[in-house]
Amino acid sequence: MVTSLEVIEKEARYFLGTYQRMPVVFTGGKGSYLFDLEGHAYLDFVGGISVNLLGYDYRPLKEAIHDEVERVIHTSNLYYNVPQVELAERLVRYSGLARVFFVNSGAEANEVALKMARFYGKRKHGNRYAYIAFRRSFHGRTLLTLGLTGQEKFHQDLDPFPPGIFFADLNDIESVRRLLKEEVCAIIVEPVQGEGGVYPCSPQFLAALRSICDEQDVLLIFDEVQCGLGRLGSLFAFQHFGVTPDIVTLAKGLGGGLPIGAVLVNEKVVEITKKGDHGSTFGGNPVAARSACVVVDTIASETFLESVRQKGVLFGQELESLRRNFPEKVREVRGMGLMWGLEIPGRAKEIAHRMFERKVLVNACNEDTLRFLPPLIISEEEIHHGVSVLQEVLEGL
Ligand SMILES: *Cc1c(COP(=O)(O)O)cnc(C)c1O
Image (tube, rainbow, N blue to C red; front, side, top):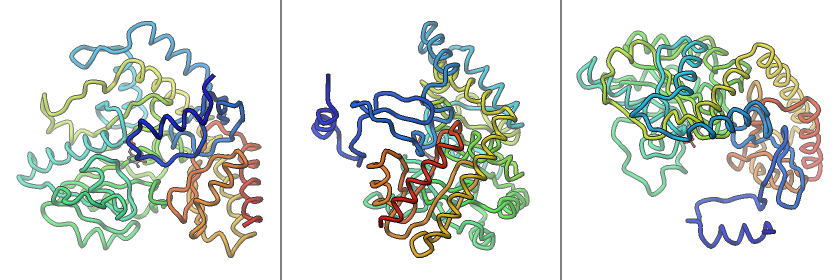
């Protein structure tokens, strides 16, 4: 049998070398636990980066995938397939938006949203092409989505980016107004910023963005790739805030671990769209779409969402009590639902490593912030266990 060390050495030999990974090889999972090659169990507060919403062995998900694999794995979008129209119907019904376009990843979903916004700006207003995004945002790793990512570290050695990208400050509506020039076609925002350190928008701020966009006929895009799909205790993040955007992008958790993304748009966007405006070879692939149907149906249940809200309150309380116990180490607790950030200036990466040694997975999204994105099926006992391990680590610092 292959050993972890062999896998790690092979990766170092053959991979391009862009990833910094924890030294572990996972080969199985159950509930909120992952198992490594040597059989050790790790409690998972990363969830494949907000992907494994239903954990690692949700039976109905695996059965649906098996069943679909036995039918046909891929056919392309030159033809129709059943799972993708089933998924489209569900997403439209649950969101109240008008139409869907399927892609394979978050970056790609945002690319489509931004492309649709350009079509809207050009076809409706002549020459609107610019975008407003926010500092600390993250929208993906293509050149345009990186351009709209408001973090310097992602821009190094990559200039120039496409023209017409402006950055405002989150929750500062005046900073948005100042940038709202005639050429702006869209504003893109994460309702809760993820990668940038878990910074939630206020409901008032999102409502104010909505009014500005209505006044100027600018499209409002919510990037819900990380914070959507039940994570905040509502199926869509925008439902939690009570503000409906013109476009919503989804990916990460949508396929239950298989790659699929979606762009949901309202009638305004449908009206200006023409045949041939966009396409994708894989987008809405039958296996991924079938898996996504199970994810969406499971999460859309009010009982399921209520359990996420309850566990979210508990998680927040436990982190808040850590902050009170270690006021000199923990600066701030941010988040909601099952999306939390803990600001521990300068020591987040070190703590993530120490928790890893104690078999609890958490992600340090930068030097200062620990991020928690557990599977939505995590139990209260598991939350409690993970936080108590964090408590021990903080005591030992
Ligand atoms: C992860 C993420 C993306 C990019 O998704 P990929 O599937 O990695 O391309 C975009 N936006 C947000 C908010 C994300 O968290």
